Image (cartoon, rainbow, N blue to C red; front, side):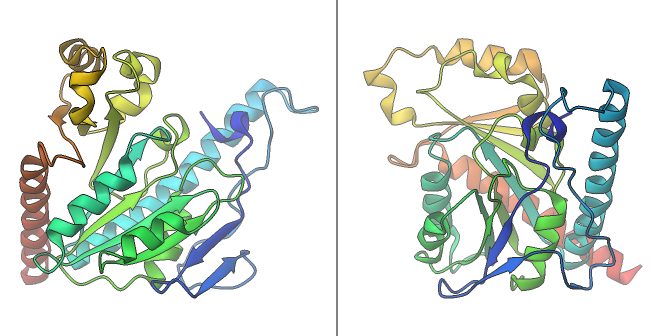
Length: 281
């Protein structure tokens, strides 16, 4: 369990509109029409909190995740009704996640309706990079928070223009710990691991790799210049999660991106077909 032990229970959340000139704060002082309460977050700093027993902390953690799961279910139903295929992109900082996303969006824009929710503790730099591709993006600044949660994403969905049958990329805050526990309402978690991080990352952070459905082994263009055992990395990832699909990719060279795009389009087609069938039922 995460938030009571990492100090991220209370986040100052800002969601930037799809235009870079508009940012507003969600201070939870007004109604957004979601039908859920605004008492999320505990603000606890760690298991040594004075006056709280270990059992009490565990109960609070479970309550946090239970509330998050409720919000995630609402997000998932909302996206399913629109036939939106949503992906939660997770990684450690510096994996090349944003550069990879920009490259993918450049290939998709004009062919597939697509939108992005960007998560960072501070700045709207990454959202600006996304908008430069012509894709609508909402920036969520989490302040001290080290991950996105489903409540934040629900607010962002209010402001994000989503076409029916579109693809939604949610780029999470760079962190391989807390995002593993927080469902956002996505169809899949996609973990990005760069070849500069070490073959044993899946063993060090098993919860994230166990929660993911796809691993993108990024920065493959650097392989000729570094010592990195691809086979060992893949074996470690599959040891943690035998069902994990793995693609080797490069945002710079484009290696493997056709396979990833095919995977995305297949998911999009399924989401659209499922929504259509539900509407006709």
